[in-house]
Image (cartoon, rainbow, N blue to C red; front, top):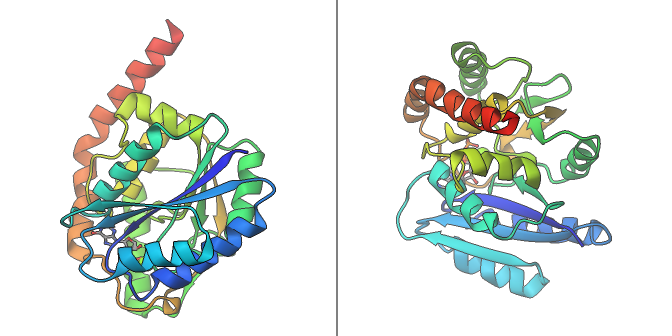
Length: 262
Ligand SMILES: Nc1nc2c(ncn2[C@@H]2O[C@H](COP(=O)(O)OP(=O)(O)O)[C@@H](O)[C@H]2O)c(=O)[nH]1
Ligand SMILES: [Mg+2]
């Protein structure tokens, strides 16, 4: 049976992890005739019980779980890099990888809809709060305003067109497309260590001319226990810095394309 890997970078989510893994256990039961669901958590130096609670919950429920650990905190980008490098050797041709948040804000019921899109032939499917039908609820007007402006601005600034959401963690990737990214950009795919890594991936996907589709998602921040770990100013700086990488990433993509044509 083909595998559906669920890759989650995580930091101090002891208040959310049990519910998250219970939800994933239910999803794996629902999908059991089609997909072998395997969860990979990248614990990025949590100082709470996130990892031990995760291991215990997986044991109690029979969920297939691997926990990769950074001893100290390096940021979600580094955690994704660790996760993708780990998956590089495990991924079969027809496997898929879904990435998501560890705070229960990624709505698991959307995975099935994302799988339908994948079946239609797209390389990547994003869950998209900025798409028609999607929205952000139970978040302060200030934060919604900031993130909407940031979303619009990043796209204009970096020349990203044709997609509505660029920073969401919740995505489905085709393994052959991930392999292409790994061939061009290395096994970890991302090099930026912060939250901007999600936009970095979109840029690289675009530069390789792969196909992206979106499904609308309602982002309800009330479902999470505890506060957001994202540092706004650091992330904004991270977005600005991406501009300096554009040329190099484009050239790397162009070299691969040339190689394919020769
Ligand atoms: N590996 C890793 N994960 C992180 C870090 N900061 C946040 N996360 C995880 O990334 C996801 C998104 O972070 P969150 O705090 O919810 O940010 P928000 O959704 O933008 O408010 C959650 O699963 C967090 O546990 C980090 O420094 N390292
Ligand atoms: Mg969150």
